[in-house]
Structures are given as C-alpha cells and as structure tokens.
Image (cartoon, rainbow, N blue to C red; front, side, top):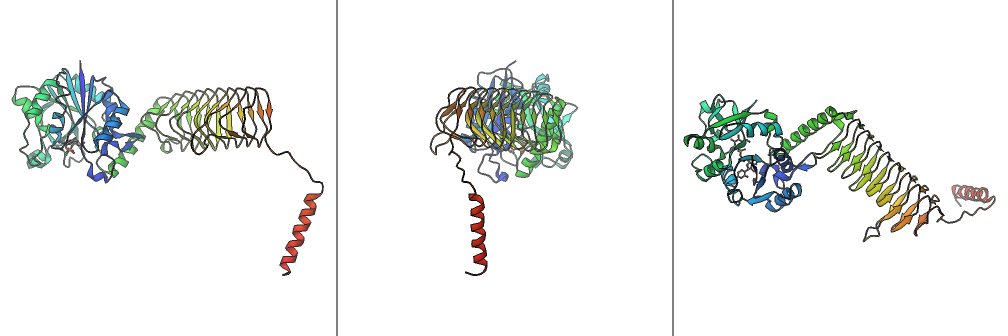
Length: 448
Ligand code: UD1
C-alpha cells in the first residue's frame, strides 16, 4: 500500500527563544525533524512532504540532507494544523493509499505505533494517549476504540475536559478522504484556526469510520521550550544507551556516554566512561573506546582500541586492530590495519599504511594558512617521536624518520631520514657555565 507522510514543521516555536527554527534544534546530535522523518521512514513511504513556514529555507535544507526525495511545501501563514495539512494537497493530488500526519517537534513516535495505525481498518485513525496530566491537550471523545470527535481544550466543556484520553496530534487515514476533508474545514472555534482535529467528526458525519490507537505518553512528547528539549535529550540518551546494552555493547557507566541518532556500535565493543559520540560514528564489533574520548564522523573497525582521551574527527577511518592512544587527534585520515598512533599526535589529511608506528608528538603539518595538504605514510614505517611532517610529503614503505625531524621532502622506501641540527658536544662546558651563573647570582644578592 502506498504511504505518504506529511510532517508539520511550520510553527515558530516562540518559547524556544531562538533564531533557529524549532524543528532544527538537535536531540542526540540530529535536528528533531530528522527524528520524526526517521520514525516515518520505517514505513517506507512513497512520499514525504514537509510543511515549512518559519525558517523555511533552513528547514528545507535540513530535510533534504536527511532525505533528498523529501518535498517541501510552504505554509505562508500558520492558520492551524488543518490548514498546514491542506498545503500538501497539490503535491499529493494523485496519490492513493494512506496519509500519516506527523510533527517535526514530536520526535519519539515509535515505528510499531505507526505500523498499528496503518494496519487499523477504519478510514481515519487518531493516535491517543492516557495523559498523567491532560493539561491543554485536545480530548478524544470516544466510545471504546470508536472515535466520535476531538475537542480542543479551549473549546471543551467541563465534562469534556474531564476525559483523560488525549490527542497526540498524529493522524492517519485514507489519502483521498483526508485531503477532501481538510478542504472542507472551517475555523469557527475559540482559536479561529483550521483544526486538523475536526477531521474525525467530519468523517463520521459523512459515514466513514474513525478509530483510536493508543500509545505510551512518552512517545507523544512535543518540544516547545528549552526545558522540554533538555528532557527530550535525556529521554533519547536513556533509550539509545539501553538499546546498545540490549544489542550486546558494554557500557561501563551508561549515564556518562552520549550518543547520536545515527550512532552504530557493533556487539562486544566496550565503551568506557565519559565517551561522546557525535553524529556519523560507526564502531564495529569487538572494539574498545576508552574513557574521555570524543568521536564524530568516523569509522572504527573491529579490534581497534581508541583512547583514553582520543579525538576522532570527521573522516577518521581506522582499519582493524589499530591503536589510537591518549591525546591523539585524527582528522580526515585513513589509518591502516595494525597501525599505531599511541601518544600526543595530530594526524590530519593523511594516510598511514599497515603496521606503521607513529611516535609520540608527531604532527602532520597539513595547513599552510591557506590550503590543506596531504601526508602519505607507507606501510611498516617508523616515524620517530616529535617528527613534523610538512605536507605535502610522503614517507615510503619501511622508511624511518629520526626523532625530532622536520620532514619537508619525500622519503624513499626503506630510507632513514634525519632532518635536525647535528649534536655538538663541548667538554666541561656545563660545569663552567653553572659556576659562572652561580657566581653572578651571588654578586646580585650582595647588591653589586
Ligand atoms: C495540537 C492538537 C491537540 C493535541 C496537541 C498535541 C490541533 C488543533 N490540536 O495542539 O489536539 O492535543 O497538538 O501536542 O491540531 N503547525 C503548523 N502550522 C500551523 C499550526 C501548527 O505547522 O498552522 C505545527 C506546529 O509547528 C506544531 C504542530 O503543528 O509543531 C502542532 O501545532 P500547535 O498549534 O502547537 O497545536 P497544539 O496546540 O499543540
């Protein structure tokens, strides 16, 4: 069956007190809009329509980054949720099957919940939840799982407000029916808005069937303030950590490990305390990420050990069984199988060949102040401690650099490159120098 998603993302989010459109605020390193897109993507939709308004250009860019097939429609004025859905009418004018309406600021709707909604037999399905504190939510006026109508809090009588079953906002149904009904909506209500919530009553009046699917309240949390955003982050982290643990990853101190929406970690990997996974990280099985490491946009293959205190930046590609030690930064660099960069180094815009050893304090000098340049280190190379590799430069297979060298030209395979001032030794000079200095100090303390 064809599925079309409509994700509402036009609201301003005034309470966020921000220049960034609300739906672009991140949770787990990804805009909350991407969370909603990911929930819906699990149903393999044929169409994804994002209704944008405030900050539409930024919202468009972000939506397309997640899915380049997404279609963005503009809602110039925010006249209500029904009006927002109506903006998708031209884009979806030829579609059949079902429409699901999601919200860019409601990031935690589960795939299973959406599957239940799609599987429901009625013409229109609303996602409801039992609210611990129903507050200002719309109420579902129902008879068992048959939905009669939705009443917005503002328009509800005391009796209706006493109903505990609330509207999450998520709705699905027959595509043609929903698009017909949103066209017929009026705005004669307390807010003067075109309410999407009027659809069930309209559908019923025309003889269509309407029903409710119920989910956990935690799925329906909508973000409209920084306080809610912070709570959502905590919820995301808790569930992402639990998922990793269930998938066979060891987290020694789960509460101190921070994950992103797209973090992938293979089983039997060990994560020590205080590790941060920014966006775009994949760690294969059987790796170890030691304490206080920071990873983003990188790939760590099986059996590698990273940290403690390592920083892997975008484009860091570690092959199997590599060792990246303390105070090492790797950026846009491939580290081949079995290579070691164990201490205090910066390896950027580089390639390190198989089983090479990079000594402590090695720097690839990749930036000349204007452009970035590449360093190519072959296989089985021994780079001596405190070597500066001034890029562009290459070190051939099996070569060595003497510690303290500043390497400015290519080193041929199996050669030893020494690029430092030769040592000069002056016999007895240290002793003489010390005596001179002590005598000088004594004269000063006598005042002459
Ligand atoms: C809506 C529901 C309410 C439900 C609640 C759950 C309606 C009329 N009410 O109320 O029953 O309990 O969600 O959170 O649907 N938006 C647009 N364009 C618009 C208006 C809204 O894109 O013209 C977007 C907003 O950015 C927001 C979402 O739709 O993300 C919800 O809109 P909002 O007006 O905040 O509805 P609620 O008052 O939360």
